[in-house]
Image (cartoon, rainbow, N blue to C red):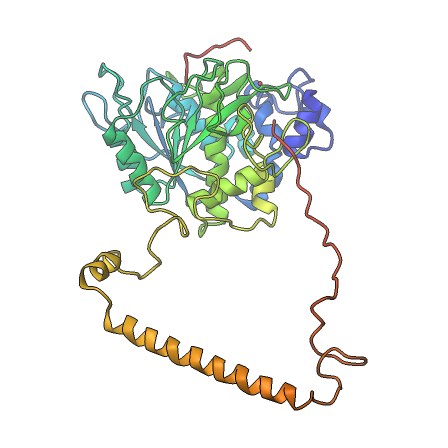
Length: 439
């Protein structure tokens, strides 16, 4: 699939050729903004007429954020560092990864009309930076404290642009369940091994797993895949903000950048539709995603493409039923099950059934049985009376039983024809690595 077709599919851009990375620069003198091909592919001017992410906090669990960067200043909250020494996480000066992810989500650019530097997909969202403690050895992912902090400090989306082979421990699983119970959408990168090897936390139930798409419309070569993948987003030659100075930038490949774009799209949807659950937000994103061959609304996710490439404008503007509470997300075992999954109905006492087993039939049950007997007797009597009347001759014909000229019930043997069956589209939308796995 050509890049031109990809742009048309993802952003609905009429003249896609003008957005080619190798095309002549536009009127802007800022090469960074000109190089943001992924943002242009989303057709941001149309997107921002629908939503800019206002009133939504996106937690970025990462390496900390340079909140003084010219393109981010004012959009970064203090946050918290779980690394040795503690403190806030908004003055990172060494590792630029968290700053880059935050900029793709909520940078506002700078200069006249904010036309220079990095512009995020959700420029009015706020970033809650949370620095992980990655110095601890062993197999811990060290996300339990950061996730709980994010939930407790108002985040509605949590971006986790990292991946690793270590399974989550019970504390970390509990933290994910805590976020799910508090209606927070967790988004994580699938990893950059280019294999089906499970990477955490993306593969964990309750998490929206993201792969990366290249500029040519195919899945990025190093993007991990598997049945847990739900969405893909741009992840090749992505410009973003860096650390070290207020105007430093970087370019990178990987599922980390794709994850940040999905988190930004989720922030846009949460801003416009604040009453949707986290699962229903994910539902909007998956229902409007598109595959390389132009298919949407597929029934089950493809291992490499998930439900397809995100299309934020469609997710914001199309008339899409809210759908089930959990949407396309697989829920952790210790979260409240959805309706119909064996859970007690709202208002039902969870211990009522066990209490009834111990005490035998309750008075209410006995009364119900008595009423049932009375109803059955009434039906029997009515049948006997009706039989007597039929033996005495049928009532005169007329408009009451579907006879000629009648407007009543239709005879049972009448054929209504075959209803057309609703058709559905079929399946979904795989650069040399410049980042370590999951980054």
